[in-house]
Structures are given as C-alpha cells and as structure tokens.
Length: 553
Image (cartoon, rainbow, N blue to C red; front, side, top):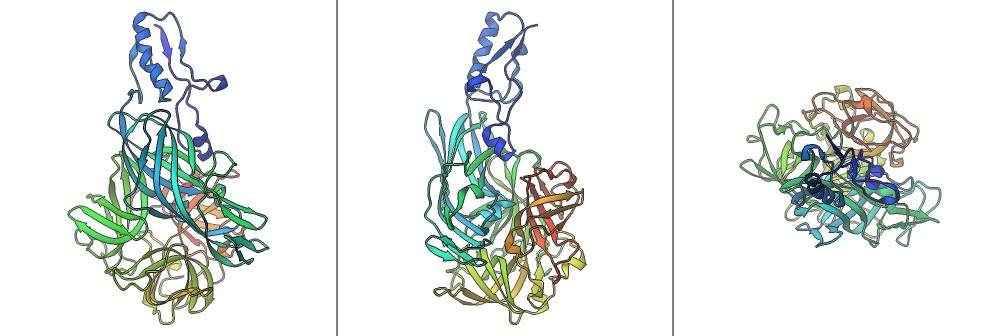
C-alpha cells in the first residue's frame, strides 16, 4: 500500500524555543520552505484529490494528518473558528535594578492574520497588572470569540508603565529624569514606548473549537539600564524575540483536568453571590464571574473565624465579603471556581504589599501590590499599585498577627514565627503583607504616605529564583531578589506539600511532571515561586519558604 507522509516530526517555533513551551507543527525544509513529502509508489487520481486539503493545511501550518486510507488523525479540520482565551504571565527579571513592582495597563490584544481582518480583544475597562505577581501567577485577560484557523501577528497594547525598584547598584540611577540613590527604593512612571509584537504565532483552530493563548512577558528585555539611566521599551531593537512570546494552552505538564486551560490564583476582591455564581470584583483587574461546583474547595479565613472547616460554599460566601479565589479557565473561556477563601467578613480598607524595609519595632515599609477600598469614604482611595507606603503598627494585638495558609499544612513551629507575634521582629524584607488600614496620611512631596493599621496578615511572596537541589518534597533555591536583603548565594529551603494535584493544601506544580524531583536544575533554568515566607530573627529557619505554587520557567 502506498504511504503518504504529510508531516515530518514537529519542531518548536521560535516563540516556543524561547519559552520552552508549546509545539507548532509545520513543514520545515531548507531555505525556510514548507513541503509535503510523498514516500512510496505512484499517486492515483483518488489520492491526488485527497492531497488537496492536506496541502491547504500545510499553508496554515496545522498539525499532522496521515494520508494512509485518507483518514485524518489529529487537528485536521480545514477552516473553522474558535473561542480563544487570553492569559498573561511574566518571567526573567533583569539583574539590576531589583524590581518590587512593574505596573502596566493592558488595553487590547490584536490578532492580525496574513490576509483578512484583524481581530481585537478589548476588555470592558483597561486591566491594571503588576507583572511581578505574574512571575508565578497567571492573569486572565478574557475570551476572544470567532477566531479562524491561521498564522497571526499578535500585538498587545500596553500603557502607563510604572516601576518600583531597589537600586542595588553602586551608583545612582536616573529614572524618568529623577535620580535614585544607591541602596534606595524608588518609584518612577515612564512613557510607554512601542507595542510589543509576536511576529508569527500559529493558532490551530477547529470549527467550534476552544483554545487558549498564553502571552509571556520578558521583564529583562523590556528594561534597559544604560550609563546609569533606566528606561522601559516594549519594542527593543534586540534581542529577538523581544518582550513577548506566546504558546498554546494548556501548557505542557500544567497538571490540569479535562477542558481546563489554566489556573488563575489569588484573585482578591469583593464578593457577590447569585446561585452557583460567585463574582469577585477586583479594584485593579476587573470583575470575574466564577461558577462553583460540588468540587469547589472552601477554606477558613486567616483568623479562623469565617467558614471554619468543614463547611460548604452556600454557608460561607456572603455578599460584601473580601475573599481570595482560585479559578480554572475552562476551554469555553468561562471560569470554574476551584477554591474560595474569605479574608474579611465585610468591606474594609485593606492594602497588600511587598516589604522592603523594617524601620522600627512598630514600623515597616511596603511597595503596594493590591488593595481593596471601601466603596465610600475610603482612606486609601488615592493609593495605587506600585506606591510606597509606611505602615505603623503601634497597637496591634497578638490575635491580629495572622498567616494566610489557604489550606497548606504549615507546621506549627513555622506558623508561630509570624502568627500571634506583636512587633516587626516577625517581619522581613521580601514578605508580602496585607493590612487593615484604620488611619491614613497621604504622601506629600518626598514624604511617603503613612498608614496606621490594626491587622497584619502574612500572604504570598512571588519571585523567581534558581533551583539548586531538589527532591520529591523540597526544592532549595538561591539568587532571590536583592530586596530580600539576603546574600544571593544564601540557600532558601522550600517546603513542598505533596498529594493529588489540585487537592486542598497541595503545592501546585506548573510545568513540572510528577513531583519536584523533576525540577530542571540546569544552568539558566529558573522557577517561579508563590510562597509563604516565614523566617526567624537570625535568618536560620529550617524551611523559610512554604510553597503554594512552583512554576518551571
């Protein structure tokens, strides 16, 4: 029997090679051509007719089909449209300066085919994203319907870049015309330059199909520090592929279930419920409607008073609560509620940020990463992502020093390094802290805004680090960001919580097959971490990092 070999082995596209993720099937040949190979005997008339749709597929760079007996095996629909869900992640921070926040506004995503009409995703309101959160997490931008099969140029419209950074060089850095002294933490707003573009991304759509595209933002490539001047450019002349790459969802070894494209974690905002729909309204990232199921996990609040387990979502979720949710992006672009955790019983002024300085036993400083303001008469209405804030804790009692474990079985010896403490001896640069604001003085000139608080909650630090040694239950990392104020060579043993993927209290492994013993420790391989950072006063805790998420970059 004659044999038609329509596709040679798949190879990685330039974007996939850069990110190490995603396979794009084409016909590679010398000179960049794409060819159809015929192996075996003669081609009769019926075979010639059967080749025509395969040739059409070749021009679209779709996945492989077997010509034997004219049976198409995989992704061989010609034409068709799909609903495409769009997500955003970030990786590879620059060596200098050390970034605490990199805020951008996403206003649109444009997919332009070689011929035909461009397709534009435009959110109902611009989405404000802190890219430093996306070193471990994923931002859901939204679904784009009716996308035809084909190769596209992908452009993302980004604006209002703002950096908060530690100048960890030996000289002053000039940012937007303002000097930032060595060892100082500074904030600078830049004029957006260029629209980051992916020159060619092949989407394998099928009629009625449901796919996803993850956009990967390279932090290092977007930032330039030259002759002491810091700048942001979304379209640098080099390197290539530049600031953005992309790959199809779900990513390899994403540890997701059927019809799940991605997991969106720690969406924090105000709760509205209606039947099985739980809506989270985030001040910066928009409104997210999630559908609960019988598998939805319910956690107790950090202080243990709201939704003590076991309980059900019906008995737990209340309009006006502040809560954190995790949700799966389904293949149809909707969100399925994975996990629900109340943070406070009613809407109050809460601010979250990354600690960069501990000033006195009752004062520390943060770079703001998120907030939940009162609907009216908010004290923090003028406070935004990336702003620096001085936090005073003059009268916080031990019950108000809390740890948001979100189901992780943190050993009591680690938990009490923060929980029930009374002063900043429990607080360390690099931790992420949420505070309930009871008093506020706005910034004035070079004087930072000051908040007085009565609740201090340890939440999730997000960073990229270098894995050194690994096992099925631990990952040791170093090269943490310099704002941790720890030697780069210092090792941070990281506790991994094993169990069934997706179960309560189990570390989410993204891009890692099996267990953390399979983390790649080769030179240049990084991991994105979302961890509870629990440390003692001598920086010698057995496991300073308790991992909720590890992503292999």
